[in-house]
Length: 506
Ligand SMILES: C[S@@+](CC[C@H](N)C(=O)[O-])C[C@H]1O[C@@H](n2cnc3c(N)ncnc32)[C@H](O)[C@@H]1O
Image 1 (cartoon, rainbow, N blue to C red):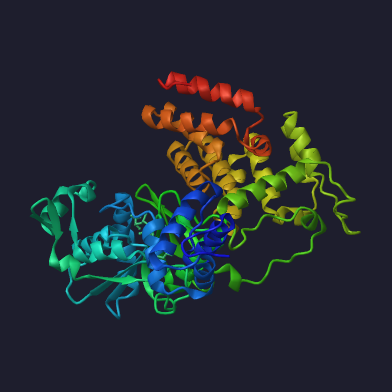
Image 2: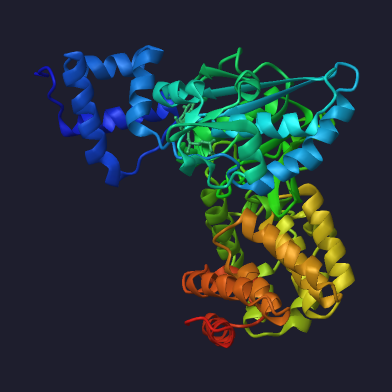
């Protein structure tokens, strides 16, 4: 029997699932003990038995209880001008672009989703205020979070100096006044932001009006969400952004494998996204002609809504592994008209560094094979190997047009740019590949080597050290595909030597 305040081990598991469903947050097994403590505290506080409380949580606990839980469970770390490059892009790209679109209404709407104690939303207000000097324009900044304590602090508008650690001095002078140990935000800025308690994990039509916002900042929140919940939040944001509107995520967050409703933008040393217009949104395009037998045998890892981006990478690797293995016709019987792509043979030739023969094999594939993104990538890699940089670059560009978040294609493009004598362009592409797939060793190694050559020793040290750590665990099939004929040990040796040359410890 369930007694008041007492929970059994399986209650923590139920609690974890309810939190995932109601708040979006994901906790791994190592956090079950912590969740149990939180559950215990809530039961004692409310004087309820575990079973009854969990039924209530699963069936629709009121927003108040979810807010109390959020106070215990969420990370609210934030500060003004966090990732200042993003605010530069906001100022110099987003605001001017949206002002052009909104010329007739002269109204802009921005959303800070998961605003915590308000620093991000107030930063948006300051930047907008500094940029839009014409008083005939109206700017509304809506800021939402589920944590009532954080929202209370946000509405108060009083901060300690630490929250302003990245705030440019002129902004501090202009928009804050000291009151004892605290810094109080100017009324003009405070009045420009409206704070609301809202749950991002909910289909809330008031929060997500169709095609409304000019830009959404949703930073450092979905990284704590379960993959399917993160995907749903992004879907809601895509629906609520005006076509051509912008989305900013946290530094460690990407849309890779989550959504293809956006273009990736890279300016001001930072990454952000722009919503495609209706014409471009893939769901509105005619479905590609499916049914190629070999595709059925090795289905391409199209990003699946609701799947974690790491999961997509894993499936990508699995697919390449499947391509590497001799086709198991019994396990995956090919339809009668199977064109019989011998990609396993191509990989075998790669393994033996017979790039010329591998290329000849690829040339012999049926034309429809060229539609497959892995085949295209392999072709581009082989072309680049043979010095056909311009053709390989074009192939990558075409691949990126249909699969913008393909880290491998950006990496091969980096190799091509280098081959064409464009070092800055090569470094730029490597950065995109790294952003899209933080665990991908090759673009880090390449960027490190390019930086070393350019005399950028600190950047070289950082990227080579990261590459060294990642190479040890890099997927074997990815090394084969992208390693340029070098095995793991050879790449590790090369990376270690380059790192030592730059004064790093290998
Ligand atoms: C690390 S803070 C991010 C603050 C700010 N966006 C930034 O990047 O500096 C994460 C915030 O997400 C909020 N959050 C977590 N789950 C949420 C949900 N389901 N709905 C709304 N906010 C949520 C937390 O309360 C917390 O304030």
